[in-house]
Image (tube, rainbow, N blue to C red; front, side, top):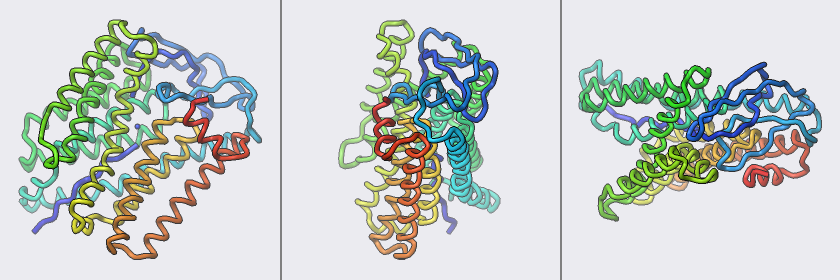
Length: 401
């Protein structure tokens, strides 16, 4: 009998509101760069000056400010040397880019297996792949793609684009096997094409702000509608099956977006609405390990069906993005990556070890690798910022000050 895997969603993190801050990268400072900040006035803000590296420092961002491109400003930087700061900036970007490797390895087995089943004429094997749940992951990837495109985080953009494309390939395979209704595949194709094109145009500042606001409204409403529905469905049949959570969230999301567009909310309210899509995408991905652990708790025997290598790849892929999220003080990115690395990847490795599905050596090696990596990231971040304790970096990350 042909086996059918469940493809994991790539994970990493789209809001918008006007915030006139400079958008200069520590690695490359263009002479002129325009940033679009929708969901409010749709104004254009430009960056017109270059600040010498030894006078620059990334200010921290509050949770609601997480979508702003990482600004730099003049000030008294608590940096040991400008060279070490620039080197760590470069290394964290490389680590984030390297996360594509484990994520790619994580997703390819499903695509290859589906192709083998299709060529063998075994279409029934693809019926086990839950396309509806994968669509939730797709919307999450598109939301986070928009988020990182506005932050000009090229490495994270590639991660999310990889997630979108790989999921779409699986959708195409399911459609060929008639495991996914053709009308839904057509809708999915339109959403994917629209999302990729709009993000590409917005990244290179070729998109009208009004069009981008419509896209942001779509992913805000879609994400906020799906999150409570997915959370509710996890515990069915222990609670009655219902569409009320999703329907109620849909109404609230539409009302919030309309009020923000009409200027009926305060500036903080507009910021909150602008942050919804990114945070809902993050929470959707964060819910994945919760759902998996709940399934493990209800059906302990099923833990043997988990791939230890897949969980290790998930832990490594997300772990590689933690130093970057910490360095640029992106609380949302840090929260999502840390949660996925510890609770999804490492959490399932702990479960596999608890039920004697992996060796003690595998568990100890994974544990040592993860905690040493996190310790190194915290120590190095504190060093380049000139802090005596890693706790200062964490406090700055959480408080935004």
